[in-house]
Image 1 (tube, rainbow, N blue to C red):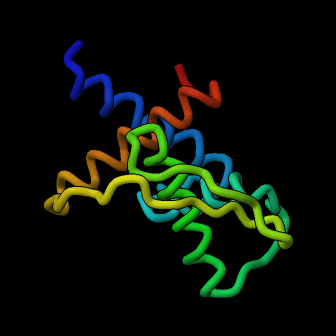
Image 2 (cartoon, rainbow, N blue to C red; image 1 turned 60 degrees about the vertical axis):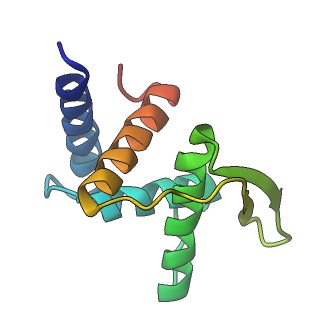
Length: 118
């Protein structure tokens, strides 16, 4: 199986698992999955969030997802329990499709690490 096919299969598996668990079978998009990862990383899964907090959750998720690629480094957790990251290396300019593939790869790696998928 090619690397692209493996990524596609694993990505579809992640989408199916999360959609069934959090969206009553509706298909979650990339942004929704990034948001869920942010909530998981914050550790406050049964809390409602304001619009700006939702954006911050997505930022947390992106930092966490791209940390293994060397773009971000965990810095500290503030007094409210929010994790903070510092930029280690600026992201290179990517086209929309390249950005999407990078995020999907990072999300698949995250769920492999968490042993949600194999």
